[in-house]
Length: 132
Image (cartoon, rainbow, N blue to C red; front, side):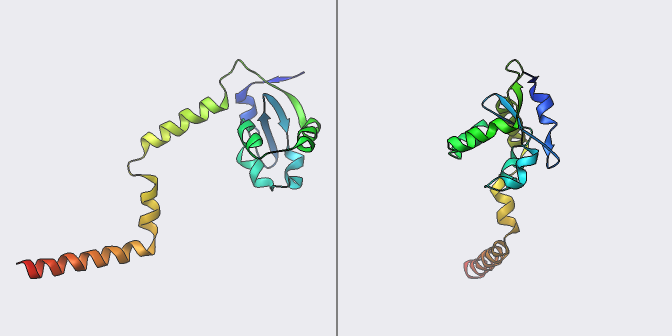
């Protein structure tokens, strides 16, 4: 049995070399990308990562669990930090680095935003005329 640390698994994160960790086991799913019923994007989104949560949430049945055996290449080293820990720290850091809320970018890019801004400007202008 071969043991891989999380840093090694994380290097295999693209279409030509796609590994995932599911329940502390490492799978090379590169050859399965085109055959995955949910599409290759689902696997590429978790390539090089711990995909245990996503795998379980998808509600895979016994057939999918048996199919994993074909792609099994080893165990994930339990003594290295888990991807869940690394990813949550990264997400926390990225969130703290944001100056404006993430939804603000969506609103500003919306065509309706500028229309609303123009209407509000007009209303404020009219109020200034009638109040003074």
